[in-house]
Length: 315
Image (cartoon, rainbow, N blue to C red):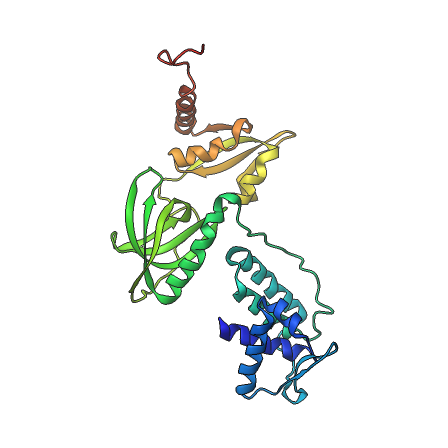
């Protein structure tokens, strides 16, 4: 981490003719005392850094040490900074600050003609996923250092199991986070939803990395087989959900108020929940067995709200 900060400090000094220690401390999110220690370290390493005292003073790098800034264009730097800002939303920490400072420093015109980001990604965690933030660093360290992870896992049937895995990749998919890993107990690659994990621990024991190939996250292989092409009638106000999930070609007909769409599901609780999310704006047209199966699923939910003869009556 100190090395990252020192490199970021060098890049800032390459960018600026002179800068105050106070501004350096603010940009690198450390104290001025730390900045002065870093300057001493760089001086001992042979970098020609000068300091001027007083109100107009500051820190600078001898011009003989300056280098050109032709590695990236301003537009390319803007795109890279956009990705870094999204990464910082998830991880926080000073490491991303140092990376951003390095990019600012190599901008050919110091950001004067750099356009505002035309595309922005908001990956900030919602309230329910805030607790996962502390896990990201643990997962990253485990992947970088090839250390085993252990955790308790509750699957989509409510069954709990203890897992030990070799972690390889974290994937963000449809508002949820997943870990792709090799499960030692199952002797196979598996995908785990982070929100279903608990009691996460990084072990001291290391593993030898396998020739990992990322698994598809298209809802096919990793969720199971047996997909059925379901025809549904939708209110046009929710047809965007079909387009976002499967593409505009899945809208097969349209009138003034509704549309007909092909919506593939697996005919189980997971698939029926997908249809149920449309509420009263969706009608299942076919196949007949899916229409009747979905109706039975909804009736099962309604049965929980039927009056209970053994329920205590209010006073």
